[in-house]
Length: 274
Image 1: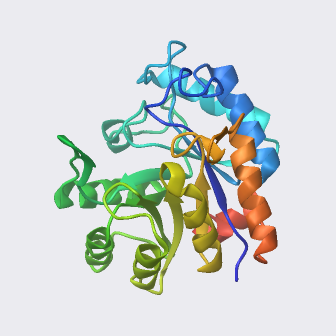
Image 2: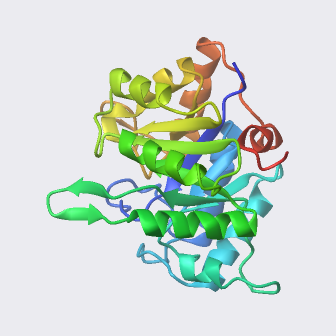
């Protein structure tokens, strides 16, 4: 099997210091959490940016300051993967021109369909928007992180591939425990449904993080962990940093016979470096 890419989702749009005091808000805290994850073996930082009061930041200058701080803290030049819905939005990318103050990322999150969060919450991503955004990323040379919540979203991307929207390999990010169950059966179904030109990362939300991580390692995929998805090392034991969560994945990988990819090795696997 190829080496394992570990992604650390260090800070989501939700979760507060009341939930876990280590959730990063400030730029300095983001950099410290990114470094802890990097030192433990993460090659990719999936990042939202917060304001100092914990609210989601839509300020481009703050976003770029956070990116600069994370890059400075991680001497291996880690891959920063901004999340959809933050300071770097689709309008910014569509209208990007040389000299703009926001540095283009190597990867960017591309939601691949509409997801029900539960209750009356829905995350709307119509097919026409998915394809338009895929075209923007391709034009800019940004590798999409194909955020997928069910099997139908794989089929949407295959349809887009058939009209030339994606470079190979395409990389899927399976989020389990939201719209599909977080179990070995469903992860196996998703991974076996992928075309030969695709790779995948998987994450399980909340208490499902660790059996999904172990399953992804065994299935030849990659793993995402972090405070955005789960805050616990095990039942009743809260992680003190994102680094502790990444370290547990690295330990699982060692036990299961997978080596950990460096950032540059991850770039080759993901197609950032051809």
